[in-house]
Image 1 (tube, each protein chain N blue to C red):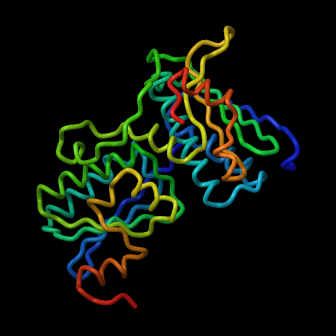
Image 2 (cartoon, each protein chain N blue to C red):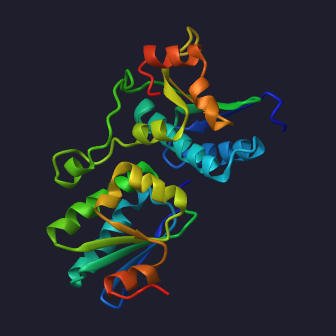
Length: 169
Length: 120
């Protein structure tokens, strides 16, 4: 696969914790082929793991009869990742706060709630997007550019969709 | 699907080392907490969590470690973490865990710090 090509990889994984590792390995292979740096590949692996874990745990209630769909689209300048879940827990969160680790350590906050924050810090664009008419449930999109400077030049369309739908970027 | 974590506890000079081999995810909660409780029951004051560099750690695993931090503060224990890849060192800093646990490349470095030695 050359950076000039546009290839789509689609995975359907059972909604069961642990299966996010399939998506993790698949995206690592795609990202390596796109010549992302080793550190960026690690960032992408962690981001997709967290997004799939959320889709499994919250988007489909860890019900293994349900599926989480992961679509990896690699093109010339970026890797676009879309994660679809059945939306079992209703609307996804809109606001993502910095984790209050002091509150967790002091017992004032529940442990957890760090996944979306970590994703936001690791990728160039991230946010829930509106599902098409044929799709039901939640769709979470992440974009990682091959060149760091492109982060500042992300498309208006992507930014608009993120901000209108609780985007994190 | 998740690799079962192997957790073991060993004593070093003034330090108890908890070795973690495998995925640090929600499935690791019982094993990590049991190891920590075992170390504490033996009077550990300095505890090193020694990770294997290429293992998978997610935010649920980090939440387990924050739970350990909470307990350690109540017991006035010092926590140290070793063996983390540069990527997971970054993640631990990102979520603020390094406010509560110092990171060292190796167990040897952590031991040297606790015992006031200069690492070789």
